[in-house]
Length: 212
Image (cartoon, rainbow, N blue to C red; front, side):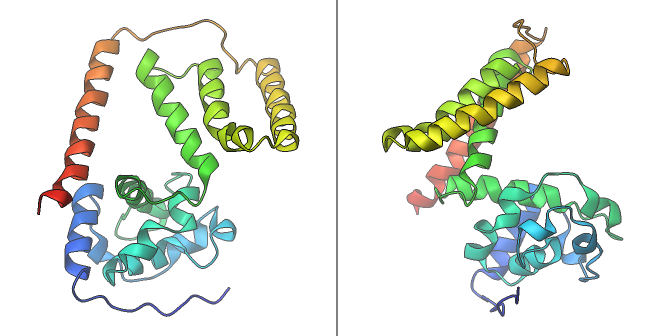
């Protein structure tokens, strides 16, 4: 797939770059496009022309729209292969996570709804218990993942999803990866405090643009 030509957005490039670097903690300007990250990215075949190095170029060029809405942001598995290979230790996984958060703050529809549903279910479950409970997690995921099909009465899709997840649940149980007991961590109050602090910080970022 041929990558489209990037256009330098002089009015937004500097501010966008500084925002992403500040929030991700990554020195993006240290990238000199050696493409070692792209060569080792395990989801490269799933993200088209948007490889880690290309994503960094989007940020440097100030292309906010493409940087916040592309397959790599939603399909990155945070394996950190890119950072391990990078001679300047740039962790692109932290950049994709930052861009995902910014995309959600700007209410941009996710390109991979199932990934968004997965993240929502994971964070909700861990906030309740301080650790992941597979039963609660899968239930929350399926509610969010199948809501659209349920709303449109797409019974075939609902049936196929049910069969698929049942097989997955049985396989997890067989391999002792499904826990039926509800277990909480000892420092649950501290974890809830951290979630509350993160939510307050996120909400403040959503309000700021409207105050100008």
